[in-house]
Length: 285
Image (cartoon, rainbow, N blue to C red):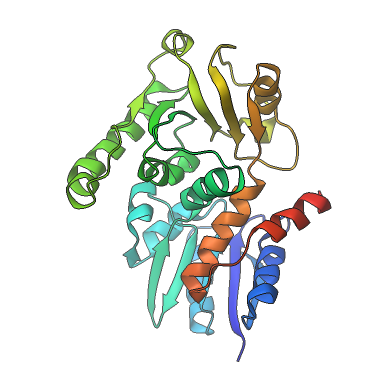
């Protein structure tokens, strides 16, 4: 019997998830279906849609904009990385129980380290932004033993993210896992940013959506630095700026496929080969 999965969002027509999971299923021989479903934006619309799918026998679903925070509240059991992110992009149904996870950070780290061959251990990272995308990737970056610095237009939000991570790490990871990374810091001002260089700069802001430029010092990229924009499909002003100032540049297409592969693994216990899927999507752009 075919196991059913879906991605839920609004809007959802643009989603590449059905194409990605179809290729995963063909590659691994898993008997699944996967569809894109639009949930109503009104209060309770997302919850009702998820419950409906669960009761119809679906095995799980991915969650995209703007429902990741609602999915976090809906899940009865949360993974560690979902707790830190305070957002959920993967739901798994275990009977009546809804389990929530966040695979964004794992997807980012795997794209960087496996696909781009860029080691994160001991590297100085600048994370631009302090919204949901930044929260979602911060813990896996720390687990990769990177040194994270956070810069946001609104300093208070950067400080909140840094503080939230520190509280979690001190309470849990340091004592239980014995990981060897420094506590995350926030960069207080543009002047402070101008005095630093980073091995890896991640754009987790929405600037790529609007085509806006991010005011950054031209000296911010260390020799051999990688600039990574979570957006994909076109060169953003951030990517153009980084390229002009000597950095290697990557977009977020690999992250998209890798986070999907992590969801697939959570549901099916099999990790698909992402390289051919990324290659197909690159060709289709």
